[in-house]
Image (cartoon, rainbow, N blue to C red; front, side):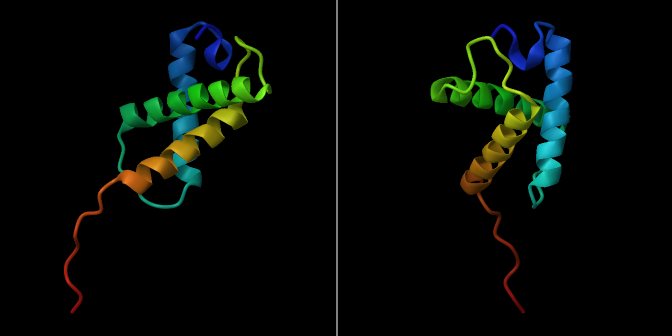
Length: 95
């Protein structure tokens, strides 16, 4: 994963992952109950997913950063998939 998100520095990767995760949670409607660590992991996973898909489709070369927009789209897609599989808590019956 050399060159992930534009640098070899893990602090930069974590910071950009956090920003991407926050933006993804802001842009996707609904309440995604996540803390700061899961938000950061969401952003990093979105960037990794965007890099992998981009390389498989021929959009990016290996080692080339996926780009901020690609990471954001990847994070939003991960949020949607997680939302589909997350259990809904039963609410109170209607009055």
